[in-house]
Length: 221
Image 1 (cartoon, rainbow, N blue to C red):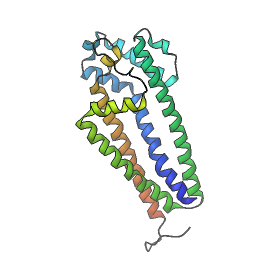
Image 2 (image 1 turned 135 degrees about the vertical axis):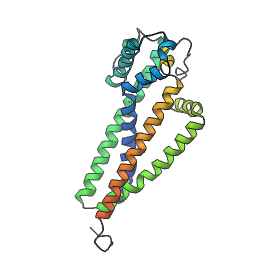
Image 3 (image 1 turned 180 degrees about the vertical axis):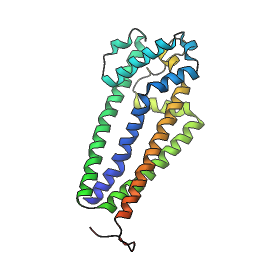
Image 4 (image 1 turned 45 degrees about the horizontal axis):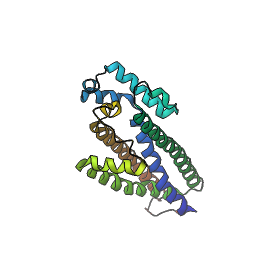
């Protein structure tokens, strides 16, 4: 039972915070607005900052509040709306998985604490994130070498159609959110996620120390 809880925690806790990192950055409107200024999106779209801000708020509300695709119709064509419907569904799964992994993490932590298994709890929190550190550092490095390649892989894996292949000359969505935007937000997501993992590991190390007596031997609970 103890080993199962440790394995569950090693998987669910980091995964929960990965989804949290994605959500925090995706729904931060200021990230979008700064990108519009940095990449001169007003010129590319021929829309004012106020219009871009209004459209951004509608997009984020659509994704988070499960709104009907018709709210997008004043701004986007049917291909863009259909793609956004796919994106909305992907976020629905993400929100659901975040809740599930959060509940499983809390249950595992609660049971280990209740049973006094501080060492096991600490081990899962300290050693588990190392796998995630390695995986996402490699992903970050590979993406920086050829972001477009791995961004394409992402779409091929998570979407079963080619609606995401938009035309920057005619489609507002890709004009507002060019590749540079996705590179920037991807880096922010990874850095926040790895920072949270580091905090988890510090807490895990402290819990491992808590499971030792003054002579450095592990206390058996």
